[in-house]
Amino acid sequence: QKRSIDHPDFMSASDKLMLDNRKKNEQPKKRLGNRGFVSPMIRKETNESKPVPMNDDKLKNIDPVMVETIMNEIVSNVTQVSWDDIAGLEHAKATIKEIVVWPMLRPDIFNGIRGPPKGLLLFGPPGTGKTMIGKCIASQCNATFFSISSSSLTSKWVGDGEKMVRALFAVARAKQPSVIFVDEIDSLLTQRTDGEQEATRRIKTEFLVQFDGCGTSSEDRILMIGATNRPHEIDEAARRRFRKKLYVPLPEPEARSSIIRSLLSKQHHNLSNADICEIIEKTPGYSGSDMDGLIREAALGPIRDIVDISSISVEDVRPITKRDFLEALTQVRASVSERDLDLYKRFESEFGSVN
Ligand code: ADP
Image (cartoon, rainbow, N blue to C red):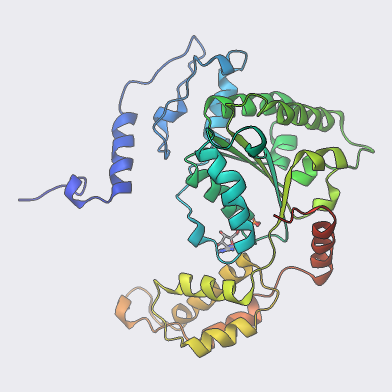
């Protein structure tokens, strides 16, 4: 007897969740007023099934179309990220668990002077895991993850940036616990004001007003994470609002090794421990994403040797070898300069949080 692949016996937990969501999608869509607003939470395959509480008091002065845009474009469908997925960064991980995750999970214990910081600044070179940390915090706290870059606030929603910021915080309040992750936060909170456009200045002011306002009620569980590769460009007033500032440095040799091992674990390869050590020695200064690029490049080596891709069977594809890595090393270089590293170290010693 044939069973459909949608049969529950054949499905993993995540597939079942997707199927459930798909079934929900088939339900009649809700309309709001005469604007034709459709709750995106019903339509999208998100990791959440909680609908947006549109009648929530916190959203009463917010344009429903903006709420929809935020739910569609800014609320990110976070795949579960665990602490083990993030190689190295032991100091940052331990600090974040203690000061952010536990308080968000147990607001009854962590209140008053034990209360969590409402702002966390992650600074360091590009591609070192700042976004991964943001996603990990959100998934560990079962929080709604809002991910936005400053440039989209200042350029994508021209003319609406200010309202967008207000709506963003309102939705975050309605959907808490929430993590708002703002990438390139330096360009929003920059200290350069000369020639700054009026619209950008207004967005920045609104952002700071909202940032100050969130967390004023002890029940608010909203964490603002700012990520930046240029921490020194953030103006002083904004910098002070991030109570915790953590350096997310380049991966140490051990972390590079675990990135290689983890990405190769599902691939056919014949690298020995000694080969991996040799690659580690050849990659000082590589960021996590440089390592990712290197490994992906090496993994293409065996594919490039294939004469007829259409007829070869998977078993006949040769393993990835050290030679593929040596070749890839000539193509993928470290992307962060020594000069930049100095800047991060200086910022850390001046403003970074020790623990
Ligand atoms: P950032 O936000 O610091 O610019 P990301 O978190 O977006 O960097 O990382 C980009 C990619 O690089 C990730 O998707 C991952 O593949 C890889 N990566 C970076 N840092 C790490 C790390 N510490 N552990 C594992 N992978 C990493």
